[in-house]
Amino acid sequence: MNYKVLYRKYRPTNFENIIGQEYIVKTLKNSIINNNISHAYIFSGPRGTGKTSTAKVFSKAINCIEHIDGSPCEKCEFCLNFVENPDIIEIDAASNNGVDEIRGLIDNIKLTPTNGKYKVYIIDEVHMLTTSAFNALLLTLEEPPAHAIFILATTNIENVPITILSRCQRFDFQKITIENLVSGLKKVCEKENISIDEEALTEIAYLSEGGMRDALSLLDQLSKNGQNISLDLVEKQIKTISQKGINELIETIEKNDVENCLRLINEYRIRAIDYKTLIKKVIDICSFRAKNIKKTGRIVRLDFKDYKDLIINLSDCLTKININVEPYTIIEMILLEFFNVETNNTESITMIKEENSKKIETNVQQTKVFESEIDNDLINIRINNTFVNAQKVFLEEAKNVIDSCNNSVSIDGKIKSILIDSNVVAASDEYVILTCISDHAADNANKLLNEIEKSIKDSLNKKYKLVFISEERWQKEKSDYILNIKSNKKYEYIEEEVTEESTEPIINDIFDMSKVEII
Image 1 (spheres, rainbow, N blue to C red):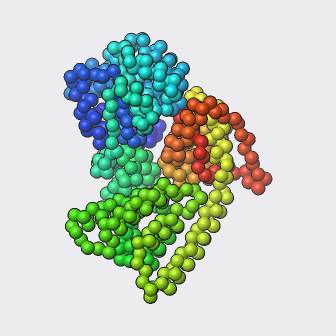
Image 2 (image 1 turned 30 degrees about the horizontal axis):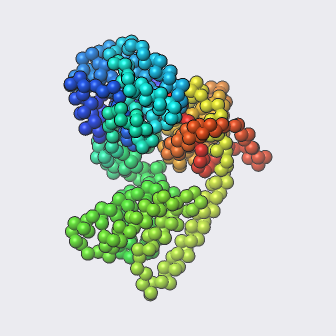
Image 3 (image 1 turned 90 degrees about the vertical axis):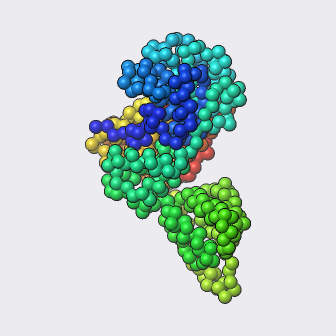
């Protein structure tokens, strides 16, 4: 039986399953009821908020023979055969961004629908189209055939030309609230018999940053071992910190307790807590406390201005930290600025700082040892080499290979778990780029590259050179790639260097060039 990851398994198939976008759903349903269908729509908003899913449901509903209050009936011939319907055309602008692709679409649009009333063209990541492709699309949007409907989706609405925007009905998708995410996750847990604590659900919702897709991916990852998902398990596996831990840290500042503040910061450093998550949570709590001070007039050691300054400093920290700076050192310095150090306590605090500095030095050395296992260049080389000959046909082949591995009984469970939690986003005949939910997950996968590649070769007789990166990094790589293509930059194959000391593939830092998602 084929395993399907949760975010794919529970992708909405009707309006009722779309979470957190009530106004948009209501408006679209009313347009169907009143037969007031526009020829072009643009759905903008953060990733994982339901843009593409809504586009598909809307496409089904407008072609449904017997829609029910604007929703697809799920019983007619069109609804039942929606997945294979040739009248619903999906295009990924990240990989099909040229004028030739759009012209091909325009030639096809003249043909009348095969089954339904409308031919619907869903163009995802439309902001990645080239200028010439946008111009070609504009001509069609100005005078579209009566049977054609365009639904454009984008995470970067600011990069879509105003000439395109002006011809579309615009819907802005919002980040899904934590309450709605928790409610949706609960339903999935009940259907999948996943045991999970309420605190863990809330933490997963927080970490997903308003995206149901990310929330389901995290839930999927945490449910693999079959045990109850507790808040402690979430913290350990995702390298996060609970609200209770954040409150404890802020209270050390309120109580002027330098010793415990430094102890907690060092503890988070050793546990490899994601510093961005830590900062964002501290900002959230500080914001809540600052507003509470304004509402109640409560007198505390940290006043409104202190919290405001702390929020601003930490926000600034997020934009300035780079890979050459140990982030916790900066966080530590920012927090220490808000302590009042008494003279009789100076010696004690100095000793604490010296001891903490030694721990930092030890941690840095351990980090260097870890980085020595991971070649800082090989990830760049493999991404570059993928782009040299990246094609859709190779992407589909790689996806089939990875899916076959996930269903193979000969693949080790540890490797299968990594592959199930990864997505193939670009491939050539030799190289494959896969995304993981976080940098930490990608690092762990890259440590096992040799083992994973050998398993694929032994099981399916397919020799690939893989590289794992985070989904966040992939988005940047993809955008940069498009810019490079628009600048007519050509990618040339780079030979991988293998030292005599080690033949292990080693990977590390962030590659500043982009990638193409070929779907």
